[in-house]
Structures are given as structure tokens and as C-alpha cells.
Image (cartoon, rainbow, N blue to C red):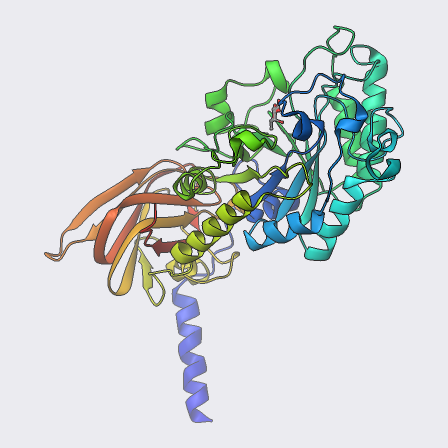
Length: 475
Ligand code: FUL
């Protein structure tokens, strides 16, 4: 009894001495609950599939016969089990690419699976895939190209309504859609005319049908294109972007801005890095020997997920309607490598301390636990500070992972990292600008028993909620 009283008294003293600070106020734009959930997905699979799979085109003309699309052995469960085994959390399918062919029986079009000979016109890829997704816990998303090289109304006001009826059919009948992909491409239709897209109407239509869907385009409104199709975000990567005066497509911000975002940008629009595992977006026999190597995939991972982006990796099904063995084997190697690298956090058992702390609720040790919502922070007027992580003993690593607590906004704009040398001095091994949801810093192999993170510049009191040290001996 006495013992417990003493312990209780001791605890009270600690609470009193370490302050009772409130959580920091959000800084600038912050993610919605849906954007946060989306960012935590980290890696999703893109599936380009359609008439181009059979004609080997990248951009179909829209004049293809509906019978070109004829997978001999469509197996969407194979796609979802490969995605799952690879650690992907969602799949986005090109339900309609620029050629206009719809992979589902879209009543707003005469150029769909329903008019084709495939499964006697009774096939429906969206039905198959959405079911396979819900069975396996993979989220289902759609790409529906506004550019349509087949629809006779394209290039007239009427087409905006046709496109909205297409959205209604695809988004209204297959359960929850986590992401809707608006391709910004806007070329000529079958009549040589170019469409003026009614973006506000398109957004309103998606929002009404799928209130939680993240809308992708060059400028959102849910997430932004990263500005290249190679799978890398800027080394500086703000999740905020200025969108006023811009449109998706030709009116988008310049590519560098899309890669880096805008510091103090007005909207929370995190970067999505789309890249294909093959040279093209659609499957081609001729590219079977050009599937990206494990090293290339790891490089893409570090430059996308490791730079505050989300990776959307395209793995196009082949003419049978299955993902080719070459691609799936490469994905399994990729997963194995990620598990090998990131399955062993060399900071486990470490102890963290900080030069500045916002009371014990926000102590440095919060960066070492597995709770996403526990984080380290400083008092409001403090915008630079150092965290020291003392390892269980000397450890050898070459990857350092940092996470900023983005529910309160992105704040950190400059940091460096030092390691403790055996003579007791500190040596700087890396420096950077932004952190965001996740930042993986690549260094040479280093052996040390302590590491120091110096936050040099932050637009409000800094926050960090995750930290890890890893050894990559593969890439
Ligand atoms: C681009 C398209 O033109 C490509 O064909 C592909 O779908 C890529 C993901 O987006 O804008």
C-alpha cells in the first residue's frame, strides 16, 4: 500500500515538472481524414488494360473494333492477390482510356464490352475487379479518361454530360471507390474538335457519387500529379500547392512545381508518382525483357514513398487478362527486398532525447513508438531543435527514415543529421529540406552508437512521429 502511494506521488511530480502543454495548433493547410488515409497506403497498383493491350498501341485511335478487346482468361483475383502479396493497398484500373472503349457496360456509350463479342457481351471488368478487391481487402479505384477519341459528342457541350453519365455508371454501381483518376490529356475527338472540360461539374459529380474518393489530377482536388512519369518526387516535396489560375492538362503548373509543391501553398495536395513497371503503360510482348529491375524499383520507391509521395506502380495485365509471370516475379522480389530492408529497424531498443520538448506528452521517445498519433514537438516559439537517438550499441545503416506528424500540417523546411564518432565528436552525414509524411534519407554505410537530427528550419514548432534506421545491401 505504502509503496503504491510513493509511486503515485512520484508520478505526479514528474507530470508537474514536465509541463501540461496543449497540442500545437495546425499550421497551414492540413490533410482531410481521407487524404491522410490515402497517404498511409504508400503503394498502389495501376492496371492499364483495354483495346491497346491487344493492338500494342499506347493511345488507341478510337476507331478500333469493339472485338479487339478479348481477354482469353480474365482473372482479377490474380491481380488482387499479386497486389496484396506485393504490399499494395489499392488498384486503379483504366476503365476508359483515350480510345473511349469502356471496360464495363456503360449505358452512356456504344463502345463498350456490352457491344463486344467478349463473353457474348456479358463481360464486365469493373464488376470482376471490384468484387476481387472487396474479397481481398484491396481498395478499388478507377481511371476514366475525359479525353475520348471515339465519342461522337466529344468537342461539344453535350460531351460534358456524356462524361458525367459515364462517371455515374462507373462510380455508382461498383461499391466504394478510393481514388478517381482524372487524366489531364485533352486532344482531338473523332470529329477533330477539342473539348472544353467542365471541371467543376466533373468534380461535383464524383463528389456526389463517392464522397470519400480522392480525386487525382495535375492539381487535385484530392492529390496532385508529381509532374513526371518516372516515379520520382522532388527532393524538396511540399504537400501543398497553389492552384489558383491553373487547370489540369495544358494549364497545369510547370513540372518542377508539381514535383516539389509550393511552400505555403494554399491547398493540401500530396504528390502521387505514377510510373510503369514496363516502358509502356499497356502490355506488349515485345517489352517482356524490359520489365524494370529490382534496383530500378527500389530507386523508384526511395524517390517516391521516400520523398513524401505515394507510389502508383503500373503493372499492366496481358492479353489473357492476367498479370504476366515476369512482372509478378519482379514484384515479389521487390516486396522481399523491402521486407528485408525495412523489416529490421536498427533503432529498436534505442532511447531518444531532445534539446527542446513541449512537455512530456510530446517527448522525444514518441518518435520511437509504433503509435502514429504520438509525436515529439516543441513549444510554439521554438522552430529549431535537436533530437538525439542513443542506439542499443554500435549499428551499421545507410537509410534513415523520418516522419513528420502531417495531421498538423507540413512545417519542417531544413534539417541535418549527424552521427557520433568514436572520439566523441559529431559528424554530419546528411542534410535535407522537407520531411512530410515520410522521408527516407540515403547515406553511405555508417557505424555509430548515436545519431542526432538537427531541425534547422521550421515554419512552426516542428513535429516528428516516426524514425527508423535500416541497412540496404541490395540497391
Ligand atoms: C497519360 C496518358 O496519356 C497515358 O496513356 C497513361 O494513361 C498515363 C498514366 O497518363 O496522361
